[in-house]
Length: 170
Image (cartoon, rainbow, N blue to C red; front, side, top):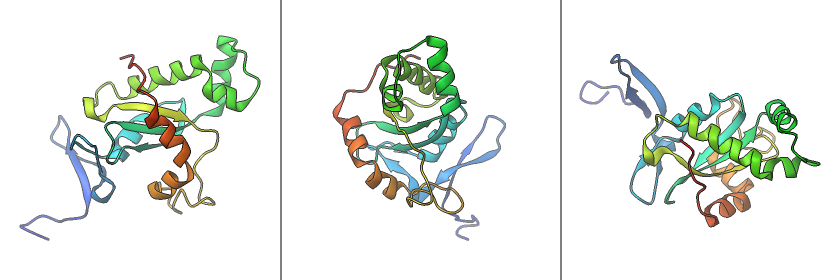
């Protein structure tokens, strides 16, 4: 306790009703190259509200914008591919099909419509496997181990930051 306040390391945000909401942990705070500070867990929770997204990890420490590794909901993705009658013959093709990527861009923008400009995901990659405890990417209580995820998906992350951010739809 310091100056009458309990310091837990949690990040909070006041809502419109004056209630305090926990939005992340201070030690997980990302600092963009612009100097803006972002709580990635808050952005991830917004994205996980989508039925199209099963898991996600928001990155961007020291970068000019946020990026996200997204594990699509396989059932929703399969249904969308059928609905649009896309010519997809493999999982890899499904994750890189321009119409699938455009659909996910719209969904990300919809989920983050009320977030600040610096909290928007500039670039993203759909990945073919979920984060797991076995790979060390999740803790036993299913929290993300960002450093391990960054090592596991280093090539995908670098590729995201090499290409220009896609146009936002919102």
